Image 1 (tube, rainbow, N blue to C red):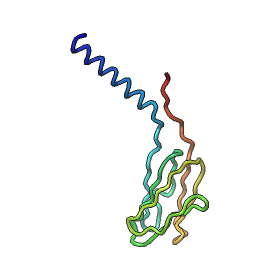
Image 2 (image 1 turned 90 degrees about the vertical axis):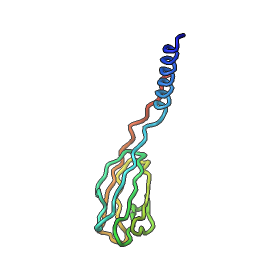
Image 3 (image 1 turned 135 degrees about the vertical axis):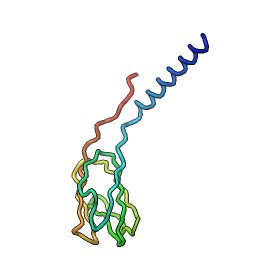
Image 4 (image 1 turned 135 degrees about the horizontal axis):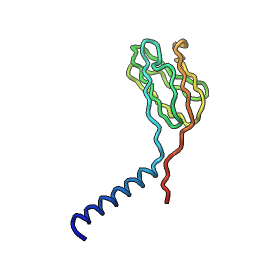
Length: 120
């Protein structure tokens, strides 16, 4: 085997291994950020896939909370504090700030579209 052929063979093998590793990895939902500012959640409405992690960050100078009854509840978030929740079940999640109930938001969680699995 020539040096060039050996190098090409090693590259092909490395590519196949990388493809199999990638194919065996489930599709990962994205991480999404919601900003709390001027007494609003932004974006106020959001559509995500199941498995998505949402992080709220309080950018106001006063505390806020993130509450979805029977689903999740943050502690009071001071300026720059964060609250994170991973949505694993499809559905519509309405939430609000318990300190300022006029502050509301909605997250619609859709079923994940599956994962890529290798064909052996």
